[in-house]
Image (cartoon, rainbow over all chains, first blue to last red; front, side, top):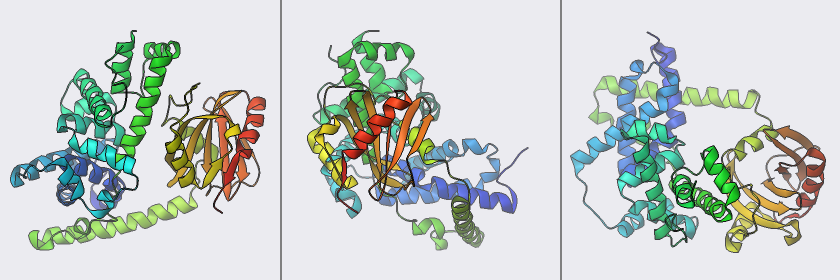
Length: 174
Length: 232
C-alpha cells in the first residue's frame, strides 16, 4: 500500500503539509467554535491525532478534507466535553481578541457579526464554500447531506445574511 | 428558467452557474444585478471569514508537554523541527524556482471573480470605491469610465485594488499592482482575455478584457493613464 507519509521523509512531508494547511484548519475551527482559544485547542488536538494516524493517509490530494474532518470531529469532541455556555452574539464578538474585535473596517465587522449569528447548519457549509473553496458536492460529502440539502442551506445562509445586513433583494421576490 | 429558480441557484452557488442559468442571466438584467450583488456579498463574507491566524499557535509546536507522554513530546519536537525545515526548503524553492508569469497570475485571479466583468450601468457604491482606491494608494479620474465593481483582493500575498471599468469597448478589469514591476509593457492573450501590463507608478497596472488585442491596447493606455498614485 502506498504510504506517502511514512518514514522520515514522510514525516517531513506531513509536517510541511500541516504547516501549509494550518491557516485553513484554524479558520475552520474558529468558525465552528467562534472562539479563538477553543480554535487553538481544536487545531492542536486535531494535528496530534492526524500525526498519529498520518500513515493511513494514502492519497495526498485527500489530505485537506481528511484534516478538516479531523478538526470537525475534534471540535465536536471538545464541545461535548466542555459544554460551553450560551452567550449573546454581541458579547461573543466583543469579547474576542483585539485583532478580531477591533475592526479593520466596520463593514467587515458587520458581516462577521452576522455570520456569528448564523446557526451552525448554515454557517458551516458557507465557510466550506466561501472560505475553503469546496464544491457543493464536496460539502455534501463532508457533512453527510444530499447536494440538494446543501444548496438549500447555502441559499438560506446568504438570504439570512442579506436580511441581517439590510441588503435589498433576498432572492425570494419576483 | 424563471427568475425565482435563477435566484435560488445563484444564491446557493453564485460562482458555478449552469448553462441554463447563464442564459437567463444574460437575458434578465435584474437577475444579472442580483448575481452581481451576490458576488459582492461573497467577497464581503470572505473578508469577514478570513480572521487573523496566530503566527504560530505556541501549542502547536510545543503542545502542553506535561499533558503528553514523553514519546509525544519527542514527536512534537520532531514535528516542529520538520515544519521549520519544510518552511526553509519551501522558501528556498519559492525563491529559486520559476514563478508563474504575472500575466498568468492576473488571468488566474479572474477565475475567482466570474460574473463581475459584465456590462453594467449601476456604479459601485461610492463609499466602497473610495475605500478600495484609498487602501490601494490611488485615485481614479472619473473620465476613465463608470466603475461597476471595486474590491480589495489578495494577489501574490498582497492586497491590491481590483476594478471593473465600463468603457466604450465594454467592461475591462483593472488591477493595480504597486509591488509588481515590469520593465516594459507586457501584452498577453490568455484564457480568453487580451490584456496589457503597463509600468506605472512604483509598480504596474494590468488592464484586460474580452476585446481583440488592438482594441484592448488603446483601452489599456487610456485607463492606466486615469490612475493617479497617491503613494510612492
